[in-house]
Image (tube, rainbow, N blue to C red; front, side, top):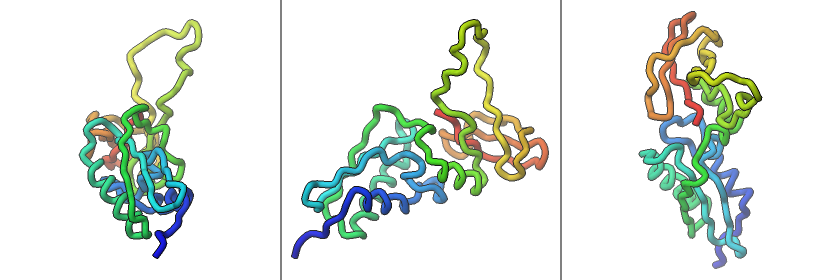
Length: 174
């Protein structure tokens, strides 16, 4: 019996259905954790390269196991997971669909890009780093305030809306 044949595009689509274990409304693909998919020439083995959202992320073992399980369930017998630490993961790798899913779930998505050269213009004064303007995912108000640099996980900060008074997590740019 021949091994099932699959393509990298199929694997990407299948991985798009694997939820992040900490935020189940966003897939590991939309979160930008999956960096590469390589399929052997005969279509029998697959290597998936993942990058943690931050060094020491406790969810990476679960993510690797979930990725392997999802692919094995589709008939991929030989699944290899590679972890790449460089370049470091950035919220810039999140998809727009992923950011919309976060907002719908009550988590404010990153409010800016990590790579922002707008402050490099000649003559711009250097000041302390300003907190981003974070809109409330519940009511849309821009009147929010940071209450803690750390939210439910280290990659999120805790904010509170000054209009609807609801607390919410903000997925920090990094």
